[in-house]
Length: 485
Image (cartoon, rainbow, N blue to C red; front, side):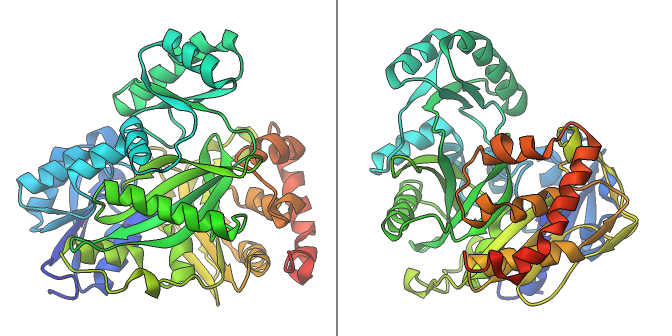
């Protein structure tokens, strides 16, 4: 049945896991039918159970199912869909899918193929940001080889980061601290970039040791409206992979926050951005400066924290924008209320280098309550397969301020029942219990350089001890040691 989703009627959800569940529910809220594309491994998934229909797209391997443009488009047409929502990951930032949808009369729930191409190429995005007057930091265009990278490094100074021009998520990204390392690490980064993205091009950026990762959420429609929904801090990372996200970024002074928001809008205007997207920045705490990092032309994993503090459903807005409807609010209508934190609970063995730990969940009982949200595809008896990302749940806690959000998150994680698989929950408790996190003096390398060495992640016994230590500090956190921070 047609609803508030404009001219759309039926949407193919071209993804899996918690984001597929999230999109199905957003479709239902918009009065749209949701068809979920499933591999053989996901026939019994929660998303499949909740959907109005399912369409099978191939074997468990992503290369034979979720990453096949022709299978996704064929599935949408077979199921009578008029739109495709790619979620995040997989084909979400592949212009080829947007092109194929257009060629077959399907609406792509996302920005245009041209925007994806220009925003997704990290070197081109740096050019666009520079043209918009946004600081891009010391770095380079794509470099032809290690010798060219060496010349750039000599100009801007070591340490440097080698980064994949075509990708993100930490793949094809390598830190080089001295000239003697450059040749070998350039080759390794190029090989990883080529394997991950089919494009081995690299570029160089100056490495910032004491940095925060801050991003701004954008929404743009087809009527010339572009707004930001505030910022997020994503500095708790391992190997450049985010583990904890917060909204707003509490560390930012008011003037810097305003300038970062305007910079994000400037990049969005350069891209003629339509749909949900994110502009990411690196904040140099020592210099008090920020620089453009990249554009993500899709909905982010961490979008729930922004939804919690703005009250705006980003996925529903994606569907409405795709249907040609204007944004129902202006920038003046967007208000940030309180603070929200998201912990990504992954099926991983922290003590064994975060090795994925697929398996069957024997008990699942997510917490609920005021200021609590759990986005997940888990249920008792479901299997976390070995073929895909290890994310099991996103646990979100919100409060009037950061201290109370932290306190609520500690209490919530203590009530999260998940048995049968190893997870990262206890690591999150250890982060939340640490005074550095309470006083917000962390940076993008803090987890790897400070917390993990202190916990000892090479033995299961050490991990268990760390979890016990985190649990023992819970009382202090919840009784106000952090609430006033």
